[in-house]
Length: 487
Image 1 (spheres, rainbow, N blue to C red):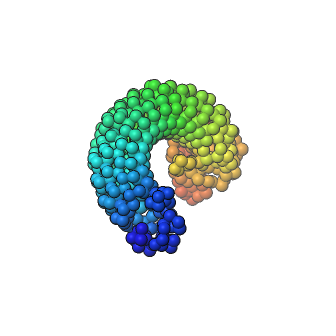
Image 2: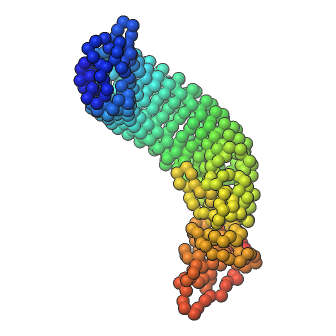
Image 3: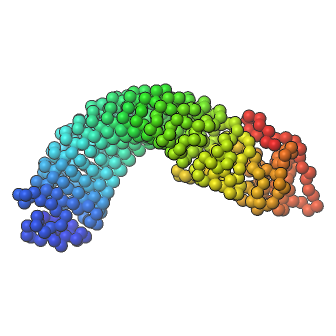
């Protein structure tokens, strides 16, 4: 122990570590009744040093924690002498080098946390001896090589975390041997190939993260057998394709269904309405077609619904407006149409900054107070998980206000019958120098800023020439492919 103090005492407060009995006065140490050290808690001690080989002499040690320090260098080979060690936690340090194969002799280990370091190489084959392992955490390192099939021999395993490494190739089908597994995090690697359907036989699974890999082909239908699964993350797999399984509704425990930036196609399965525990549906940036299932309105626990950047069409399911917990809704850039639901017109559906219907083909009147927007609607896109309330770039009309909307704010008073609107999805048709406007029975025109006048066709604003002006146009203008007239 004095050797440990000589290494660690330069930065940590180990003043109580004196040559007398460590079990009596030493802080950060806990002993067995026979006087041998049972536990060392060195976490958050600002240790800036290596792991001394002398630790291997503490053969009765059962738990060792050195979390969130500045420990660097290799894991000593002497750790393999700690045959009674059950819980080893070294995460959030600066350890490098490979994981020693000799650690396979630490057969009492049931928790190993090596995450958030700079370890390289692969998982040693000798880890097949670690039959008592329940929590195996190695995420956020620089580990590489093929899927470590040795984890399939850890038959007591409950939590497997391999995320944020550089593993490659297909995921092994032997995962079906892990009959007690609850958590499987294999996201943010370079795994490829078809996702093995054998994962669908791990019935205790509650959390499955496969996002940010390069899996190919359709999602295995066998995954829908996971009736205890709570969280399914599949986002950013650019080579997954095909539809979501039609019987996704059989995953009755699901609370989070997240598959963003995956080229899933086909329709959103109607059976999704059976997932009554769902809190979050994030299916944006896919290639879904068809209509939004009306049954989504039965998901009373739903708080987040992201379906933007797809090819959905049809009308807005009105039942969604009555979902009691819905706080984030994003449907922008689809082909949804029909009248804008009343809740969006009068601001009774969601709080300010929590919905986005931008770039669809909704039509009808819209209130400038919808969603708490007190002036003209702001055309903002999603930023992170939050975004400004937006119903812009639809075929909507806005009543007159003194602060009129123009890709920002235009302080210009117009006539009482004037309505302001966007005429083209995502584009200010007035060339950035005015707002699109129309009055009852008159076609849309550009209301131009000071110093600018409308062009002959009234579809943009140009610098005003001295002594010249342009007469208003009366030619009607259609809005979008549905042929809706904007006046």
